[in-house]
Length: 436
Image (tube, rainbow, N blue to C red; front, side, top):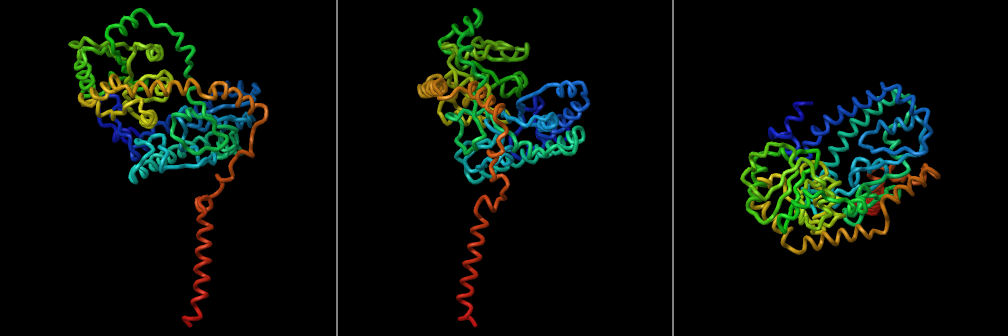
């Protein structure tokens, strides 16, 4: 496993900085996750005390994210028939065929896709391969977990495919008015942005220290690449590219979330403020913050969209490129490849654009206004639908029969093939007398 992982890492820093997001790498990327989750399932089985405690409780509804299926087997063992699937991403490609939802690799970017919805032929092929590799890797994990939960709970526990299909609903972290359009089924309920509490964020008060930092210049940029991948671990050439850009803009203050105290590399730069932690939502909500440089995690992407700030998005791994391209369609952000961080000119041009080209701020504010005035509230939607499931679920009638059809049946190829054979047969019978 270590050798597999080593093959896709090209640097000495945090491997997620240097990893190449391409279909051929996904299997190796998932191998560690498969091993960890399989061990997690086996460890849970050994936790007799937790299992006994769960058996004493009477749950009406159970909710799980199907990035692992052991929980679904556990729900079945506990007799919980009313289940809801949730996705922390906009959707899970690997889940779609198992709940009967249509797949479209020609215009809907998959979770790990590196392109938008307008794809060339080769990009469509890569889009499909990203989904296929993810499905293959996770099927291996789910099969192993099925063996584990059947060994622990009994051989009669349903297969993971049937447990997924039997779920009453599927909540996705998608916001329809900014996400890519795609065909869904009635069980799929978008509740994207549920973690963004605008009222709470607007009520957050910055400390005097942060107010002083924001007041140093007329323009301020926040740089944060999230918590999963420390920016202090990025390749040195990329740090140098960012630093050179900052030095070239002395009239702009840059707040950089940087997790190390070793700041020797930036000692000559005056218009930069380093901090191991930043009050991100409070800063994004402050009118004195001009823009954001971010990795494109969906949490930060949703906060950015709701709070109306233009941004330069630099995806690092996973679904971040999809999230960045999703917002770029609304012309409120500029997307750079992470390797572009070594190019001072590209970074400088992107930051200058979001600061001084009116369309980026205008479009960012428009997106925020749309989200503020959405016809539905994601928190209320979750509560109402969950209560509905508790009262009336499960809903076997909402399980599309289409998921039981094969490719030929779904695409009408069986009819076309039969019709073609029939026409050819009639033609042959008509011609046969003249041949004889």
